[in-house]
Amino acid sequence: MALITIDQQTEKLAALLAGVAGLNSLDKHPDALQKAHFPCTIPAPGPAQYARDGDGDRYRLTVTRQWRIKLYLMPREAGREYQAELQLRPFLTSIPDALAPHTMVRLADGRTFELTLDRGSDSSLSIMKYGDREYSGSLFTVTTIVKDRVMPAR
Image 1 (tube, one colour):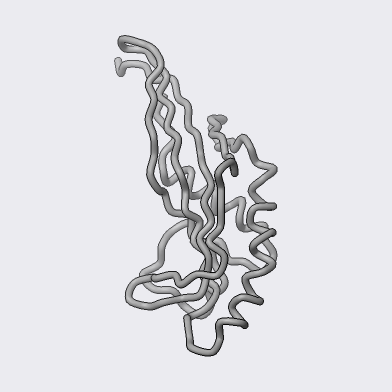
Image 2 (tube, one colour):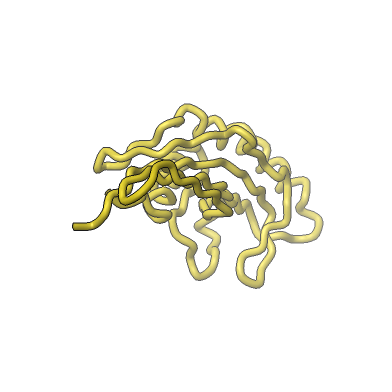
C-alpha cells in the first residue's frame, strides 16, 4: 500500500478548515492572493521525522510531519495593525477548535492519518509574506502522523 501523500493530507486539512465561519480554506497556493481570498488559510507541509519498524521487505514506515497552516487576513498597511488584530481574534480559537475533534482523519479509500495539536501553536498577529507582498496574518502549527505498512511491489 502506498503512503498517504502530501497532497492528500493537504486536501483533508483544507476540508477540515472549510468549516470555520468567515474563512476561505485553500488547498493549493494560488499565483497571487486576491481580495476575494481574504481571510484564507493555506496548509503547507513542514519538516518531518521518519521511523521504520520491522526488517526486510515488510515494515511499517511512520512519518511525523509538522504542518504550517498559514492564515492571511489582509494586505499589510501602516496604521491598520489594530484592525488586523481584531480580525484575527476569533480565528485564534476557531481554527484549533475546528481541528481538535479530528484526531484520526479518514481518506475516501479508508486509509487514515493522525492529526494532533500536541506541541501545536500559533504566532498571534504576524507579518506573512506571499510572493513579494506582505500580509497581516498568523501561522498555526499542527502535526500529522502517517503509519503505513510497506510491502514489496510484485
